[in-house]
Length: 211
Image 1 (cartoon, rainbow, N blue to C red):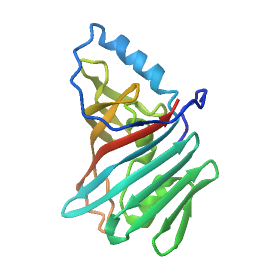
Image 2: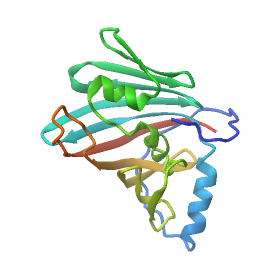
Image 3: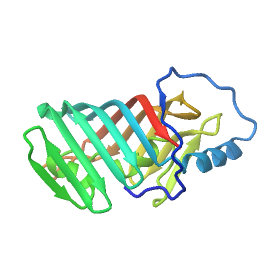
């Protein structure tokens, strides 16, 4: 997960937990979108708490997610996945490390690959690092649709289809609070004929961030 380039000035922690607010449409959707991108690219340090659910065919996976980012360093805590109790996934510029409830440790070059090796689920962490704040990942071609407020409504990127179902105002930012992400054949089984659609549902309950 590459950090977004930008100057990060630590001012204060702002905790946010709010209900969605309906906003009026803007006159210039494209201008509003460009302004949003410029503002959100500087947000590279935050903490998110939410609920995550994955499904492919008749198999499901769900967890509480706590995700802390500080520039290049990410720490993701999954509580309740696959009956394992707790998984902690850390990534920085040296690579990624995963530790489970029994203190077993796995290592790999990046967090997305490591989570797949440990659980068998292909969670798009590289892209989600940007999608979670309502941006497209900068290193991949994308197709996007904006809503009447100049925010991402739907995005196709790196084989994933991302729907931004709901936005909520946290502090001074209007950020996604519900995402629905799908990919055909997103989970690879030993059976090469397995080609079910992977569904990822993410519901954000709380943001804490530094600007």
